[in-house]
Image (cartoon, rainbow, N blue to C red; front, side, top):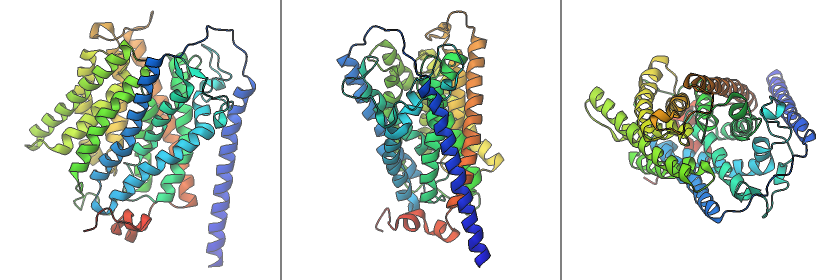
Amino acid sequence: MQQRCASQFTRKRISYTIIGVLVLIFLLAGLPNLLLAQETAAEATPELNSGDTAWMITATALVLFMTIPGLALFYGGLVRVQNVLSVLMQCFVLTGIITILWVICGYSLAFSTAGMEAGKLTLGSFVGGLDKIFLSGVNVDSLSGTIPETVFLTFQLTFAIITPALIAGAFAERMKFSAMLIFSILWSVIVYAPLCHMAWSGDGSLFGDIIGALDFAGGTVVHINAGIAALVAAILVGKRIGYQTTAMPPHSLTLTVVGASMLWVGWFGFNAGSELAADGTAGMALLVTQVSTATAAITWMFIEWIKHGKPSVLGIVTGAVAGLVAITPASGTAGPMGALIIGFLSGAICFWGATSLKTKLGYDDSLDAFGVHGIGGIVGALLTGVCVDAALGGAGLADGVSMVQQVWAQLLSIIITVLWSGVLSFIILKIVDAIVGLRVEGDDEMMGLDLSQHNERGYNL
């Protein structure tokens, strides 16, 4: 008994030491950017645009609406009745905890440009500096382009909130609440914030400037990132008790349809809002989002109808989400024809990923977080390099860049995202497992997470 306690104490001490070292290394990685911050040449002072600001406040509310209540209801309806509150709780608590993290260090690590140089690969190409921790320097007068910086950082915060919430769909019904919380905190700081910086921090960023990849609203940052982490989590946590031998139907497709509808509406803020202005590009992003989503939903429905004899409500709403995911990286560069292509292919390929591929490989991705977001994100990111072509109604390729070169840039950004998210998610999950354990006990899983983790019931039956 004493040996067992000593062993557990040693494991915890080692785990805490590893976490401390990782956090210290990560924070120190940002210090050179802070120290290398240089004065830049004076530029024209940006001016506040009230129209852009009004639109971005609206878009921010729409994206937050995607998580609470949109994703919460979508996922909540898909789980069994004894787990509905656990999913709602996960979405709600992440909305709170990620907000606090974003204020403390997330925004700085994601968007500080200290130490970055246009066209040069530096440490600042991978992660932001520490000059904006605790939102240092952000006030009512600071601007980001033509909108207040407060609006910009809150808009980006809503992306940081929904991304770890998407991952929760992979380990639904079996992960400890404490493990989910610790994993999400570490993952958001170590995985999400740097990847966000690589894609969206501007001149000197790895994806946008050095590689030249296009990711308008989060194909790599949100969907591939979350999807790969979800796959790793599903594998490490293990299958649900009775998976593939016991029927596990959604307990309320009504909630799922309501949640999916909220996601569809909220996604206009997600994609059109990523233009950060009320202009023609935002309008086109709005249109292609609608076209891709509708096309993917109908594609999934007809494939299922042909294959199984009947079209299902679960199928059409899942197809719609696949179309939303896939158009995200291309929403600022594709035209209506490109949206039709992306919608059709994402509906078909995500159907295969969420059914045939998952069955063949045997992993338990409870709510198809990888099948829809991981695979849909990859499809969309690759097709962004094709559908940007003006011949397909897109915004047009950059001067001197061919379609092959653009697709290669897209592929490279996908590979980096897969490796970054996959390796770091694996390490973080192993650390969390050593500290608190990833999975609830078998009896608690059979009872349901609502009672075992929160001592509450979703319904009084």
